[in-house]
Structures are given as C-alpha cells and as structure tokens.
Image (cartoon, rainbow, N blue to C red):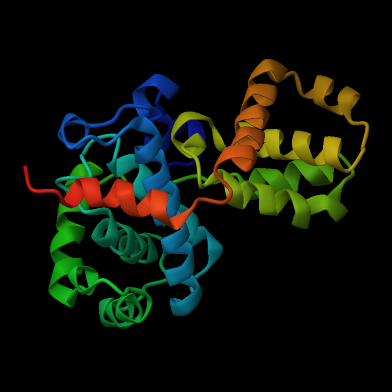
Length: 251
C-alpha cells in the first residue's frame, strides 16, 4: 500500500469531470442518456449501502465498494457489466481489499431477500465470475483513500470536533456522486466542512485562508454537493425502471 495519497494508484487515476461524464457507446446505443447513467449509479450506490447494512461491514468497506463501482463505469459499459451484479460484487471485492471479508453465500442470501426481479437473484458463481472481470477492469488497483480521516483531523484543527457527525453525513452523500474519482479526498473533506460551517453558522473564513488551498475548487465541490441535494436526493422509482429497462432491451 502506498505510504500516502499522492504516491498511491488512487492519485494517479484521478480523472477530469468530462472524462467521468461520458456514457459508454454501447449504453448510448440503447438510448441511455447521461442523466439516466447518473441515476443508475445513484440507485446502485443506495443498493450497495442497503446490502452492507445486512452483511454488517464497516463504512470504509462500503465507500471502497462504491468507489470501485463508479470507477468500473468509466471503463466499461452497463450493457456489458450488469449493474445489479456489479454492485454486490464490488461490495464482496471491497470487503476483501479492506480485510473485512464477507462470504459470497451471505451476499447471495441477502441479494435474494432484497431483489424482486428473478433475473437478479444471482448464484455464488455469478459473484465469483464477475469478481474476476472487475479485477481486470480495475487493473488490479484496489487501494482507495477516503475523506473520513482528513475530515476528522481538519475539524479538530478548526476547533469544530463537535460537528464531526454532521460533516460525516455529508461525506457519505458524496459517494452518490463521482467526486471520489475526480478530487483528492482532503479536498472533498474540506468542501464538506465548508458546507457544514455555512449551515451551522460558524465563521471559519480565516481558518480556510490559513490552509492555503484553492478555495475556488472547494466551493465548486460544495456547489456540486448542494446541486445533488436539489436534484438527486429523491429519485422516483419509475425513472430508475425506465433507465434500467433500456439496458435490457435486445438490439
């Protein structure tokens, strides 16, 4: 494992927003729009969180799983790699990478419990086969750095340790976006702290200035998070169904 973020494979794989906001050609051919592409990723992120609650893994495992899921779809299409199978497999792979292994049979049990669609009630062999494909899609780079640790350290430095729980919740929501693929974790943490200080009416402008970070980037990340709250927090099931059905249409 790399000694720090800047020497890690995660750092070397950071992307630009325009590289992330691309619908793979196979999905585009099926009529999937960029908005629908994002909706499916949000929906499947929620699915990973729900599965994780049943199998009882640490939050870091969930965050790593979601990071894998989102990284995969910067390289592969949803037509080729079915999201309802990729999502639990990412959780399975992340549990091993984060040394908190979940048995595949346990995942399969809860997939069947949560899923009403017979097409998505997978077997253990389906998870194991997809795991091999995901490892290849990820180029076997499994190290992911998260904003949680810098968040706690920065809040302590700012004299705001009592706001850790509130800011932590905002960090959790950032995994419903692609921010972890684009920005260093500490910048995401700073954006969550910035939102927290505004919402909690804490004047920390001088503290941010002392950090000598690019506040334009921090504010832009903050605006993305707030935009998500405005547009994607509640997604009607019918919109998800329409988007997923496009992936199943035989061409």
